[in-house]
Length: 415
Image (cartoon, rainbow, N blue to C red; front, side):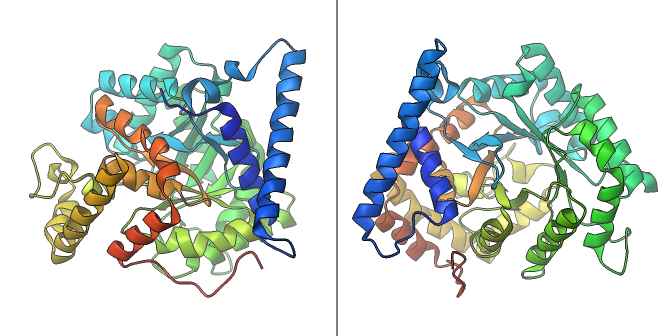
């Protein structure tokens, strides 16, 4: 179990909230005074919570956050609280690992305070959702204690079983819920824009307008009627346009706007989360749920001497990853990882823990999705939470100097 007081978690959440409001920014008062005011305000909030619980015969020690040390953050600027680490099912559930191992991983994650579990209709052709649903049913966990997210875009081989048409969103969600054996999911992602659902020549408006028409149906499937946009975008700032338009259209039709974007984020992939998404977070409240903190295992160190058997890069269909590792760029990345390993050793942690904590240091990140194929790996990754307080500004600067890829933006998104 992790060691961190619930009070510290509450104070951290309050500080993040104040930061969102711009209360953590120096105005006409010196920084020390602002810090004192924040601490006083946070302490008052904790005291109020303790008093409330005491009146009802409860205590902070009864909370999962206190018992496990897990940190929780708001998903974007919504009120949905998610564990700062989540468990993903891509590649592993229904594919790389057995169902028994999947159950062990989910149980370990849940017992350590992870409440966010992510899947998609396309993962293992739907088997990932089946495995996830079977485990939830078997364990008998309260549905209210879980945050389940899935994605819609590719549900089958037929032309009508993929895309973001009204037909497929409804049928795809129904099929996902049947596989998950759940009455609803908490967040639905559109895995990518659909070029075959045009309206006025713009993918986004087509998607949003279909969303307007099927919202009553979607509301039956999601706890917050949340349908948000995710995917892979090569065009610089295209995602800003996409989600900004989604926000505008949602407000126009009095709908719940997008609250989250899923994005790849790790030491070798930074611009989208560090430059593009902060603008959306501060303007319209879109948070970041990031995936692949270890760059598909590259940052784990397992590929420093090539591609070992049974690794992800050795699997069928992952030749692209193998080629990336063995490329010239891949060799340069491995050289940088050796330098980062020295920093990890100084901090008393492993390289994967340093990499995950590095992702968590970004306050715009609501949750980092982990992928694991065994319990030792998952427990090691969860330990990254204990490394986070050790990432001082000097350590972060040292890491940036080694990576040499810190993205630059002239914009001040708090202005």
